[in-house]
Amino acid sequence: MSPVHNEKRILFAEDDLISAKLLIHSLVSLGFQVTHVENGRQAIEAYNLNPYPIVLTDYDMPEMNGSQLIDFLKEGEEEPLIIVLTSHSESSLIIEIMKKGIHDYITKPIETEELALKLNRAFEMHSMKRLDRITKRERELRLEGHLDWVQWKERSGGTGKLKNINQTLFESLKTSFNQGAGFGALVTLLKMISDFSTREGDFFKIEASFMELIQTNTEMAEKALDTFSEIETILNGNIDLERVSVGVIYEDCKNILVELSKIAGIKNQTIFLSEKKATFDSFNVNIHRNLLKNTITEILTNACKFSVAETAIHILIYIESGNLVIAVYNTPVATADRIEGIPLPYENLVFEPFYRLTRFVYDEYKTLDFGLGLTKADAVIKRFQGKIEIKNIIDHLNLKEKPTTKVICKVSLPILAS
Image 1: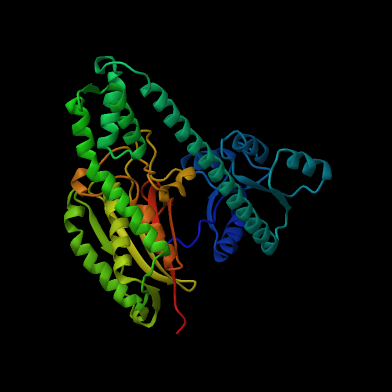
Image 2: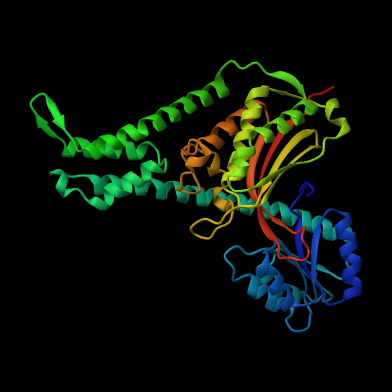
């Protein structure tokens, strides 16, 4: 598997095969990834299989023309940016095309430089719209979470004896604790104990099930607080960074794979590490070695935990644009909602404390399932002046099969000047 350096994917609908071939050759040489179809119907099939950020379409095509294709694409929830190619120069037709809400148009014969400029602007616009959608959905998710908490408190309120407790609520609380839901559940549980305990002289009598629940989860809460303390130290404390070569980091990754053999064996997964480059020893980064090793271990453990059984996890280490890049690719399991990997609005939320994509706990991995692992990883990489991101990508490498969803966790650390 080779590194994914960009996501400049274009769906190109053109029935003139000769001109299409020439244009595709030019666009590919400029770094665009082009999928060609010959008419609107084929374009719809390709788009439904794997939506594209940009659609470049001829206006006059057989079976389904550009106008009909635009109408279809405009009906989707997340429509692509559309650029129309046309041999017509009549202003009335161009106005009609623009009224459909397309991003831009270009008249034939096509100047490659002009088209490349329009495409690059379209990708910039797509990124801005994507960021806006993410931000909007994040606000909605936070609001939903707050409302859930308010409703939960209302359902758990009231007074009375233990026999009058809503048993569904109690079972939900118990399940939520066992799945590492967080401190909000702890507050609710303590309030319930206050409401439903019985005073007998100098003592209070409470149900054993309540006490067992508290005892079971005290250790989890302590671990969460310890992790918060570690994160605070990482971000603001005194940490001695050192100049470490990429070659040494590569060897550390090899050792981590040995240490994680039992973790990978839980679901019979295999972890592959890319080859060591001869130039690695010539590049250095400013890091705390143990913190970086712990971060890589956390990322790989998550990859194993949330990957399909009997699949491969790939680690690629390479130098790009003045940065050391450590990229981990895995094949994600589907959630209960049949969503694979990281949904678009969640790409930033996964680094927030207590946020988890799944409510399941994985005891066999011996990890703290409070959603703090990636929060800590984010703090470490920021302390190294680096960047970490997690997102879905579409894997097209196996041409004999349909494209598959992969999750990439990409860490970038700045290379020091020699």
